[in-house]
Image 1 (cartoon, one colour):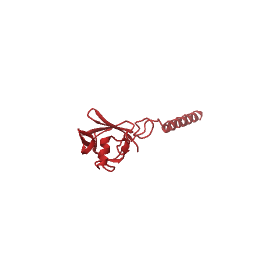
Image 2: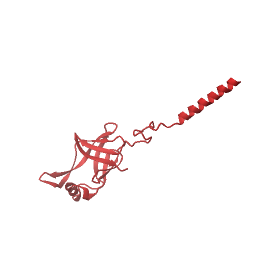
Image 3: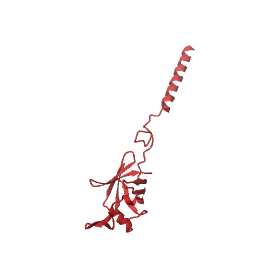
Image 4: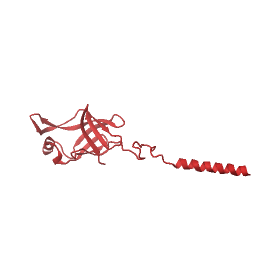
Length: 158
């Protein structure tokens, strides 16, 4: 009888330890957790992105729409393109965004055209050659490059 009580006590102790370990959170093993905080990182391009001069682009699917800008912060040729109606809120700014890897996409960007003799006066818009969009591992920064040239860096707002 004494041995049976010891055996039941040991089994109960092992069960308590086993359930306790199963309930423990290791803090970094959650599905989608790439930042070690236990949360899920947003690796989708969808959302609102802003650059250093206050331009905002809202991406949904394969298209980015110009959603806001601070006119005074833009360079002269960009201001000229807005004055002439070539660029405005609601226009496509990025298009054909296609995933090429875990945190990379290819796509095109609207570019303001100008004559080299008058570099501050917009003459129209065109689409860039393919750009590469690379998101940081935490999903908060988007770097845009063409070849080895960095075109811009954008920060997630939403």
